[in-house]
Image 1 (spheres, rainbow, N blue to C red):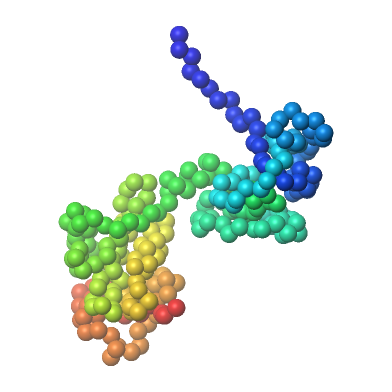
Image 2: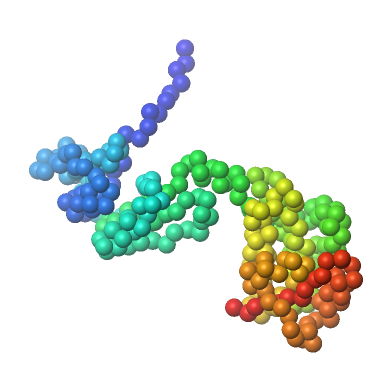
Length: 281
């Protein structure tokens, strides 16, 4: 009869440290570790060692040369209210705090730091449940495929937007948990001028930040020498202002194609529209 193999959990974590006493003191002071064994002059393993307990986790510190730094790390869970306490303690110990990767607040907050031997640790307020929940509900954005142009224009028909021309636009599609959540586009007017538009988020996904992610994604395709215009409905001005746009007060400098589109929008829609320009950074 075949018996299914089972891993019961983590036995222990071994870390190589140049100075066992110094590292054990760090683990004790910062992470509340309790030393339960020190080899002293004895050597049962490949070098001197100390055993520590952090809660029920067995940490083995073994004497040796420090490693090179990498993103390999161990993350300890802490409460959000304790984050500032640990950050102050890490700074007081003069440890190197590493920059955190870009993350959404729904994932939880983190502090990354290196110990004396280049081990990277993370103090994290989230857990697996919150991380998976965020991943399921997170908005991701990708560039549209040419095969999707018919679907794209059928969406724009629903809101009476101009059709897209795949060869002269960057079209972005927002997705959430494998479902299309919305779309937007960056239209090439000429080599120096672009129009951000076609922003359409489907009703079921509104309020999740899809429009913001679409704008952010599309603006990454703008060159420093290019100027970006936008013609949104006036009730959306606060959103576009947050995205870096401002009212375009010098229309004599605006390309004629943009002015024609602005005029068309004013005549086409019952809601008033505005002519905006992305502020230079």
